[in-house]
Length: 519
Image (cartoon, rainbow, N blue to C red; front, side, top):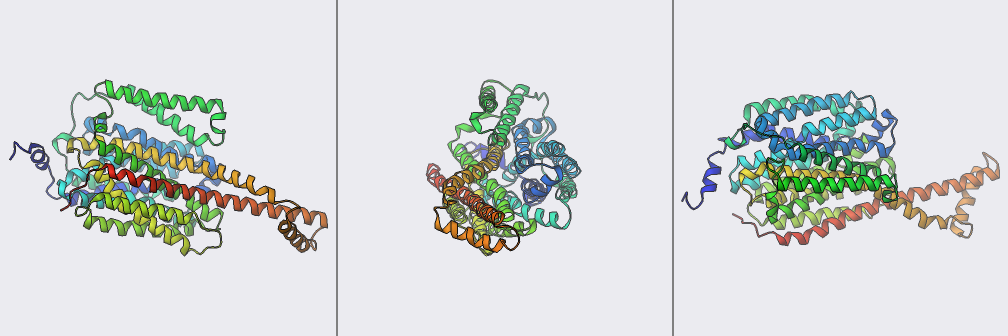
């Protein structure tokens, strides 16, 4: 028996006695870290006002956090060997908590971006290590249930974030969205110290060397990529020379990074996992889903506050059903994930996300709050139903020894996907609004009977307060403001439609996976 299946025997002998006890600090740390990626979304207008920054500049508060954690994520294997995985996990949690305290004390946009980078760097190791710990703590036949529990932190946290952030911003002040991380982080670190297991292959190793060259190329690649996506729209993309240079440096750095990881020893990541077809396909699907998730969470509060007149709290509250849908789907996955073909669960989940996005793509400004809540619930259900099984599909053919490295690589690309989605959606809103404004502005003409009638009506109402010429000018300005609002609304709708089509396009890729075994 041992000769036929030595790997399974070797892996199972290091399982903890009580895996559910190890879940507590992992879930708490993941929840706090992932929630912080979105909790600042609804507070962005308030933070931008405090720092005298524009909306485009305030987006750096979100993307710097994602990119910084993306830089650290591939290094988790190295730091786990240098300090021991358990020690590095505790260090990451404490650094994240300290950086959260500094974010709440920031006095300028520059300070905030620096502290968010430090916060992202501190939390960069939390998700991949948590994912690896959860996968290793359970035997293979129970990993579906384990990842469903893990999904509670990964999926629900970014949805709870805007609700909590809106309530705190309206009732207290925005720095408290960061201060609340400090006690939670300390509790998670204490629990990790007492409850986490440490298998022999995850303990501290001697003679570990840092891949400085690989780390340099990784840093340069992701830094230039962030600048390209965040500043490209304002600089008119490739029409600006410096944007072309930034993009070229980013591409060359990415190539140099992967070449250095392939040909050198003692590297940050082990590229051998890319030989696994399921891992590659699963990672690609998760990257697109992450981009859709973070982009939708970034623009929906903006739509509700700027177009519908919602407060920060109400906009966050309107997104609460997404968390309810995710929680429902996570519970469903916990019971059926190991009993049905996971490809079917992912397909149903992607269909729900795509359908909800298309529903958002056909809304207008004469809607009730329920019209926002229902598609949000459907989208949350789809996320919960698809995210957990796709993680399982991408990882189930890997060995335990590969988990930490594979989790690091996968979460690196997921973070890049989230940052790209957040940055690109700002471009979508700007460019689509310009396109629709160009298409509609011809209607504001004296040859348009409807336009003339509306201007005359508004002019007649305003003439009792001012002269006829000024009243006529103000009436035309009101009509132009309506046109701007309508073009911006269409830009939001177009963005949501793109999200929906992207999700539907992912479904055929599931046929490339082997049929998962059920029990």
